[in-house]
Length: 374
Image (cartoon, rainbow, N blue to C red):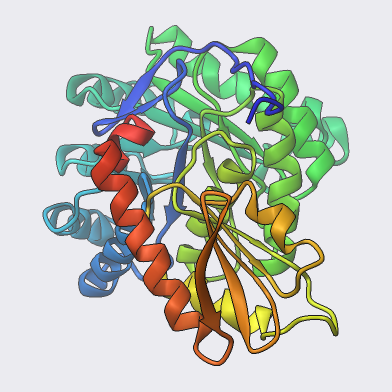
């Protein structure tokens, strides 16, 4: 569409997490994190494969013990997506997971010990050519920063991040990305703005401990959406107290809404009123579930009556506009002769949408990996 705003991305260096590029205008990637016990290898692998099926780009796994580090070796052999190992305090775990094939280390150098231990981890990452993610959270700021600032502030998060970066700078290691997360939307936004002015490395954006599925999605969309519109952010994670699959879905919804990374179906649906000629809410919920496997970018409009239906249909790939007993069907803005029986409309719509997706893929030879440049 001609009115779509072009977002100018902040320029950064590029790193690779496995084969996935991050930064320097690479497609903005979506991450999630397993919530299984890492040593429960079957459960962790199953969750990662489920995340892979819905398009996650990178998965982070908590590695709190040497036993869980051993599990990483076996998990890596059974999945395809790059794995970030999340490590705190014990530098030996970082060395072990790097040896076992982790694609990135999530550490804060300052909390893994003395200079010798920090150097050991950095040199190990350099040897294996894997990046480090520095992750600053407002809930775990250093005690002296808590004392200095009294409470989490953007300046406190920035100072903490720059401290961690300094460790890597002294060792001439620049393969890293940084996050400065807060559970507060305003603190997070301002922290990222300050950070973006200070470094050239990729930035990982997110709201930490954002809450449950609904509230967390809203907070994340406000903060991450605002930052992305300013060109800040090279990779993101939606942190929800919910199924990790929901994090990925919300992430793609944000990118799709901003027309940054089109992928899958963009559903347009009326909020419903007494004019609706079919159960819009039920149909939308059913189609979202049934068609989650379609990765082809498409706009599908489900409008319950003829007030706004024809107007929305003009710009949709597939659209239905409610009428009594049978509703109008549109494809690429053109009304078809075929009408959809309101009693069986969901099955008919699924058939038309799948047929259209196949047609788009065949006609344009669409490869989702090409679309996303991954």
